[in-house]
Length: 258
Image (cartoon, rainbow, N blue to C red; front, top):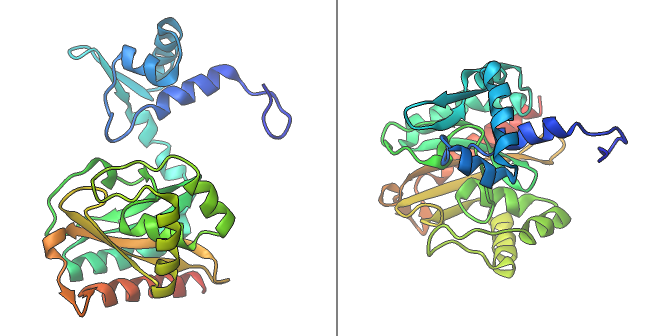
């Protein structure tokens, strides 16, 4: 097998990456059987790769539960990740202020290979709920939640069509999975410049999102706040906190343009 640049891929490395990618916030501990099912590898190969990864502490094994988890060696790599660092550094204090003023948890998202990727998150003082999707580095589908739906709306048309042709998971009865309906919703989001997604990812939680643009006016990401649905007070058909979210998005965009 060859990579895009014509160089041969190392099969063992590909298999090791498949094992590491099998873990997620919703599946933080996996058995050997579960890992073989996730990766499609046989047990012998999976076990050898796990043992090798464990020597660098990328994987740890819990003998009491007979399960594996990502190890501290992974954390040592995180400070070296530069992807999205400029956007994240600019947004961090603004997200903190937004959470303080709204009482909601604030997020900044970027588009990454068909998904919305969470670059940063500031927990709100009034939201004491831990959900699998709320961690930095989490990818979620773009057919739900305020920030991700904003990203979908402002993607170039061809890229949006690509996303809409892929899997569109249904998380609640309010999740939109019809591509035509999502395309129509994208038109509406672009016209008004924000999105309020109610109960479409987790029942009882809603998200309010707005786009962030770079100095050239291209989509750089989106921000959003999430809170319990009843905490969103509506005024004239709009969430009361909408001006604060739009102000925060505009400030991040302005700082990206400096």
